[in-house]
Length: 161
Image (tube, rainbow, N blue to C red; front, side, top):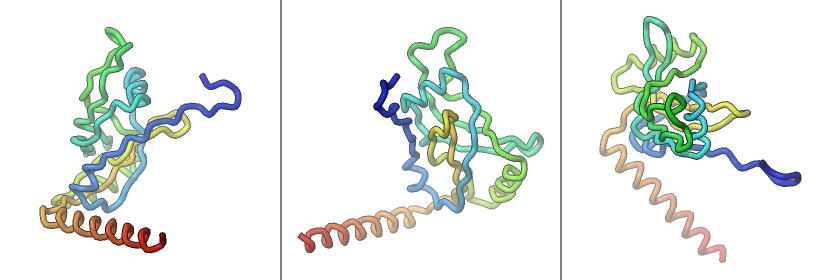
């Protein structure tokens, strides 16, 4: 607990950098996620890997589910309190948003990928992105443009000194 005059510890913001490398993100959506207590504590410690994760909408029940996101076991949880690291987790969104995402994901090459996981007023939120898969030449082009921009910024800072 922080004492008076101190700020509380910052909540972690877990970012999936691989998603922006592998996909063109067309749009994003903030959703809630149903977690167990030990999972929330692991997220607070930053022990999450979003790299392999993806989301799917169940067409019959109109629910979103998150697959292959690894939330490490909380070391102080025992027995029934402990959670399975790669279990399927339910995402919380409005039905109209789920239907819209389901329609957009019907196109070939699109998928729902987790972009970031963070806390908003004590609740864990997940930013989902509608991603269109990049080809190898797109990835190379992105790296080239990023490198060129970095070199231009470095050149400008050297001139101003």
